Length: 605
Image 1: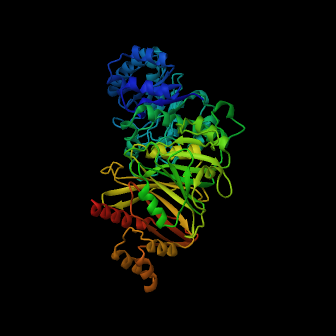
Image 2 (image 1 turned 120 degrees about the vertical axis):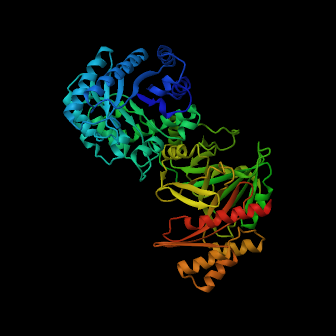
Image 3 (image 1 turned 90 degrees about the vertical axis):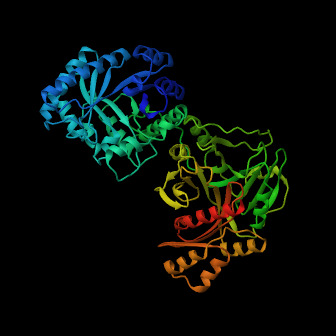
């Protein structure tokens, strides 16, 4: 189906927004009136530019507070509407959005509103345009799409139809199933937005917290299915009011936005394989990843990380035969240390490797979703990887799932065999700090390309403010990627990333690491007093935990023991042991860790 986006969803001038939408691959746009009147290009110039860029201008919006008023007020509203219709005509746009009245409505009557929409329709016809009436979720009298449709039906005018907006329907908890009763020819326009589940007034929720499909809590698959069942064949258009998107590069946001529409069409097609699949964009199916393959740390000098890994029981498996790269492993946990093209860089998580059931399918799907390709030099004798760059710049690679060590390990020479003496099993999770500008983009990227699903977001108090965390994962937990958004005061630069490894005996590993001289992240005594009170741990248990700076958590289905290393560059390691069916991350311990890291950083300066 045709794709469109409201210019209010992007940053920049109207001209910049049009260029960004065309470059991303949108078919059309909705012109937001403030974008036009704030610019110095005439409607005719905007119309010509859109034509040169291959974009259609699909909707002009919004016309506010027209219906449900007394006659003197309505006479002035007709004048205002005529001026808007004249502008739409100059733009070559044939549909104008009319919102239900939120400010000046004084008459709570479907008949009055219908009569006034009918008369507005008469004026619109003289300019060759039509009006799409939308029930705003905070409308004074009309705040339900079903009532808006009753009013449109009563108006009974060829130039008066309905606009359906997913936010206004779903934010109020309205059932979209009645949409199928609206005649297709009377659904003039469709607007789509997702949103997080929030408890706040709908106006603020709408103006500041809308998201692109796939990033929030709304069931947009069902909503769009209902609209298509009604017979709608117009554009799928995005209207997303969001403070973040209006501060970021419009070219990036436009790609992000189109990715969300492609993903949504694929979801709707999959849910309705017998219906509109030919009309919808579908993507190459690809199963989610099944295991972490490796994590790569990059720096100009990785020697400090090598010392840390050695203290933790990792084995140096060798150096790459063609690149300044080394491989360290323990069990199925593999850490690649890369000094290639890393001048002046401190150790950081540069890449994550995944094992997937279908490499070709994953690669095709990533390309269809416009995932940027990560390029690396690879010789003919070396194993090729699928590759993409995540919104935060982390490179993601994928290879076919395999038992034991993958073939690429053979490219490393001169090291030792891995005896796994330390009891480290595999990578448990990789925690990636996100810049505030890309957090929502990362959720959609990992959902759409790799089929990961988001856990409910959490907020963790830290010394400099709240850290927002959202875990992206597979259903079985084989892949866990917590995404942490640092407080704005840090701008993402003062909050490290970390790699967590699953162990069979985390206490024994801590003892061995201490004997090798590991500098643990120090945990304050107050924490252990707290543990005793909260969980009733006995003296011997507490003494063991305290001795090796181990942390503890318990849930109804199991418990969790873990410890952290100090931070090197912008990365640190965590070692975890899950008992029973514990499926969390020791979230209540995060404030202790954040405070300890801040204290350690202060002492090291």
